[in-house]
Length: 385
Image 1 (tube, rainbow, N blue to C red):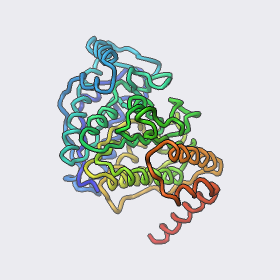
Image 2 (cartoon, helix red, strand yellow):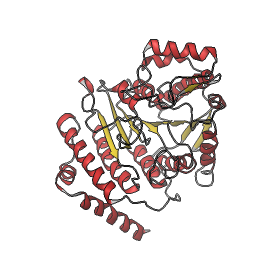
Image 3 (cartoon, rainbow, N blue to C red):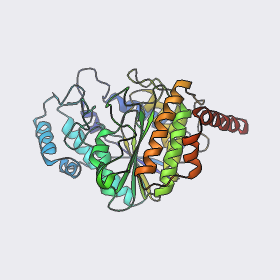
Image 4 (tube, rainbow, N blue to C red):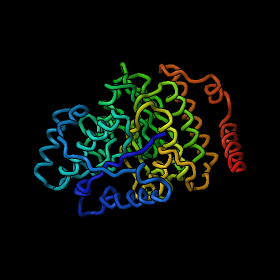
């Protein structure tokens, strides 16, 4: 488990803001910091440390974005004007300060990771929808994102060891996937809501990468209104892949907008249990460090999901979790169809070897059997408690 985690935060991140109502605003930090402070009675202060990043150069983002895109954005930022890059994504007078701190946070997180220390960049704006030239994979917008810190960290760490990116935002990390699509040195696992129902409308199981990257992009699709049971089943596949790769570094593209009630724009039924369990899984399956980059989360996801994730990373055994939430019959049936398609793609296109018993379960069993097995497992766990 992670011994301690450094929360990389600076007040300059609040300077990326606009007067109009917008879900991606500085108030998100108040919710996130409230959640982190709530860990004080559960986790020793020595295990959760708040540190400030230096100011960094925006030029570092040319490692994952085109030079023309970075230069264009930089010129806009230097003007300190408030402009809309698209219908969702804005820049403001303070965005250059926020993004310069984000560049510095990336550098600080990498230094910590190479020392074997884990960190969480509590920064803004988010990252994973920003592609090589901005909009990615035909998306209608950049989804609040300007530069991709997640892809950048993964790219740099991959030079020092086997690196896996795990994205669990409710939306597909299309920018990260586009940047890494032809690269075989980084495996990108993305758990997200059915692309036919939400932005950015990408991330189907057959989008597996190309060229050297073929088979290294794993899209795990979950239906709308999925509960903890489906999300925890998705973690079984994540665990199998991590066990096979045995990564030195894990970069978590951490979105908390699948938390129930987090936002009216996305309907999901995930509670704190999933975030706690993915934290435990990621910290247990890497050799050196977990670097987490904040993506989505606009309400209770930050207040309750974020601290549960940190508690999981730190291996806290007694953490107050929400009751297990369960998915509908229709959600399970759709999930099973997507999962079976994904497993067939992994078998045919990936170098990842899946256990035979796992493959048989999804190729030959009915979704009802898988659903009932998960319910039985958690009933037994409740009885043991």
